[in-house]
Figure 1 (cartoon, rainbow, N blue to C red):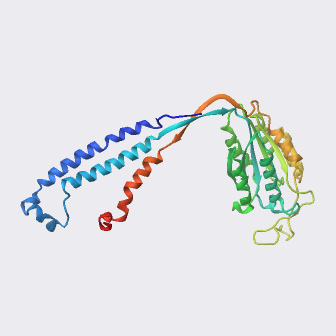
Figure 2: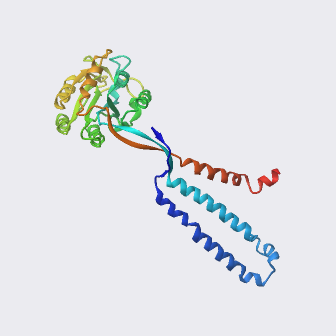
Figure 3: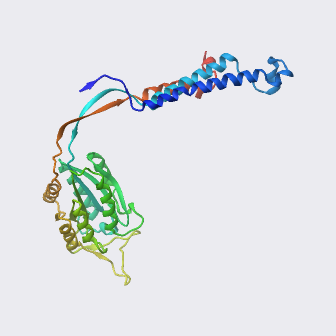
Length: 340
């Protein structure tokens, strides 16, 4: 429902409309002093421009400029005050389900033991989650040696879909697979959500971690009400890890490093976090089960009887007027006279 009205978001800005008063007083006093200056003892007023190299503004011209800049200042003050009219009543929503995806983008995710490779398979799984989702707000965090927040918890699924093609292992310069730092960053993101909402983490990885204390850290998150799920990407046979300049990563003996799916570690982490573990496949069963596990909010994401008022911002109108008044000055003085 839309109703007419007028409202200013920051009405205290109107105090700035008093600023032209002291400026006008200063301009009047400075003009009076200039008229009585000592330079008038040595030349007549009409000869002063030839003596000083400058032209003194006429009274009408000086005050005309002052009035113009006062008008511009007033329009900018009105814009800063935030004029609004025409508002819409919007129904509020209960806090619902929130799922933060932790995507492993370390070098081992380039292994091609699943088609087209592990990271490509992971991107497809995230796309399936987004397209099949109806009741869960989703966020995305990519990590290797350090975490990168690609999207906080949001309902804007189209933005998440647009982000997927850009996900690559070269987003981070320092390689590695440090899950603890990603969990710390995820905890900070989920901490700001409403207490009544359900919070969950979904790790999509090959499980190639070499860190101590991971089960304890996941268990601590579960104690805070943050469930931990895992989706394994890869195979038990594994494959060689591609190098940065071509070829394969090798160990000290010159042998290609083989990366295999660490399914046991992923299952242990999911168990510690009170969540599910599934291996990624080309069916939607794993997607449906993970979404169902994340949809455990105490309150459903349904519209409540509470409403909030959303105003239609109109601050652009005075800004457009300022631009229109300033536009002739960008084309030089007297351009309209020359055209005439």
